[in-house]
Structure formats: structure tokens, C-alpha cells
Image 1 (cartoon, rainbow, N blue to C red):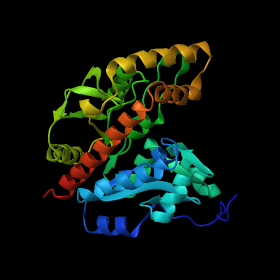
Image 2: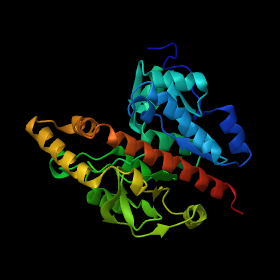
Image 3: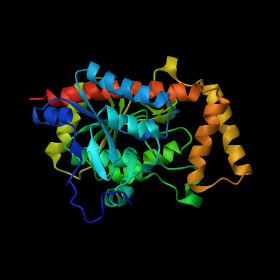
Amino acid sequence: MSQHSASAPRPAGPVLSEEVREAVAQGQPVVALESTIITHGLPRPRNLAVAAELEAAVRAEGAVPATVAVIDGVAHAGLDKDQLERIAAGEGVRKLGHRDLPAALATGATGATTVSATAFLAARAGLRVFATGGLGGVHRGYAQTQDESADLGLLARTRITLVCAGVKSILDVPATLQRLETLGVAVVGYGTERFPGFYLADSGEPVDWTVHRPEEVARMMAAQDALGGPESALVVANPVAEAEQLDPQLHDRVLAEALDEGRRRGITGQAVTPFLLDHLVRATGGASLEANLAAVRGNVVLGARIAAAWAARP
């Protein structure tokens, strides 16, 4: 256990960096960013360069980035250079979903936050917009495994606008959309009538609502508040550009191979997703990783524009 004992006083919510704190106080646009892409989604040292690139992309749109992480048992929204480097180094850095946060804070752990933990902490910090790569979802074979991402349940009770490129195509996309509907989480396509598949611009599934401008998203956010209903999220599904997506034929072939190999090797439970993602990266010669990054870049830029539209509302 670190020097932070379980009995030490803790901040009631995430500690905001000076930059984020000033932006919130002045009503300036802020975009929350997750940290697991830094620690678990990219190889070193590229991960640190990408983290800096994403923050710079948010700033270029006139917004303030708030990368979220837990350091020595304290949740942070907005990291300084040293904190970002520490997370990127990966030594002793855990992967934290929202269920892990109490244990991480009580034991003084250091960890990168997933979508669910980032959304939770961002909302606690008073942030309204969160941009990431892909949303978690219902896994294939759910009837046998009951494997569903904690992201979905958390979004059903957290008022945040999540900009993402849909869900990873290794998941059960139709079941994920059905689950979001059951949970009452609103989903809108940004410039598309099709739900994106993370690596792919089109998962093959439709969306019920489409918007084309950040101001339209901001109006939906305001309508959520005015209705006074359940504190659920708004998911803005922003497809990766077709020119930057993974080749659909290559994707389908490699994914089928990965699923067959996983079944042959008896890989089940939490081991399935990292196995499939690793297989995709290797079998596509890194092309799936580049499509991943293209999607994230597009999402953080759109997130910044939505945050600006939200901050500028009357």
C-alpha cells in the first residue's frame, strides 16, 4: 500500500488541474479524455506522443483537454506533463473501470481510466463532453457468457455526452444497440444514418437520429436537461472517415480467422477481447491500429467542437 492509507482524507471528487479548473469556472469548453488508450491501447513510446497529440487537437479547436486518471489514490481531471509521462510509462499502472475506483482511491493505486470510469469521474467534475475511441458493448455469445461491458450500465445513469466511433466490430453490434435502447441511452449518428463500427465507417446497423452540426448536439443536450428525466448519457456516433477506415474485406477475413482461432484455443471470458484485438493488429500489419487512431483523432476534434457549442449556448 502506498503512503496514502485507507483512513487518509480524500477529495470528494476529481482534482482538477489549474487549467481545467479555470476553464470550468469561466464557462469555457472542456473535453474529457480517457487514459487507457495511453497505457493499454498503444505501444511505447508512441503512446505518450499520441496522448500529447490528442490534447493538442482539443486545444486547436479552442477547448481545454482534461485527461482523466487516478494517481496515488487521487482521481484527476487534467494531467500535467509529469503526470501524463507517469501514466504513459505504464509501470504499476492499473486499468480501472468505474467499479475499481473505490478500491483504487482507498489503496493509493495509480491507474488509467476506461470509458466507464472516465465518464463517471468527468461527470463528477462537472464536465459534460467526453471523447474517446470506441464504446464497450455486448460481447458475441452473450447468451452463454453474459459478457457485457460496464460502459453500458454506467451510461444509463450518467449525464455526459460521449463522442465515439461506435463499438468495436469484434462485439455484437445489434445486441449492443438493443441494450442501449433498453437502458434508455440516446444514440445519434453524426453525419451518418449508419452506426459506425469503430475500425469501419459502417457497422451495417442503422441509427434512428442523425445530426450534422455541433450546435444540434448542444440543443439535444439542453433538451435532456430541460426534460428532467433519468440522468442518462447522449452517445454521438462519429464514423471514421472512409479513406482512413480498415479495408472492410480485410477486416471481415481477419476477424473471422481470429474468432475461429479463439474458439479453437478455448479462449473465453475477459481474455477474448484482448486476444481478438491483438490478432487484428498483427494480421493487418498494424492497419487496425491506424484506423483506431484515425477514429480517436476525429472524435476529439468533434468533441471539442461540441463542447464549444455547449459553452456558447444562450
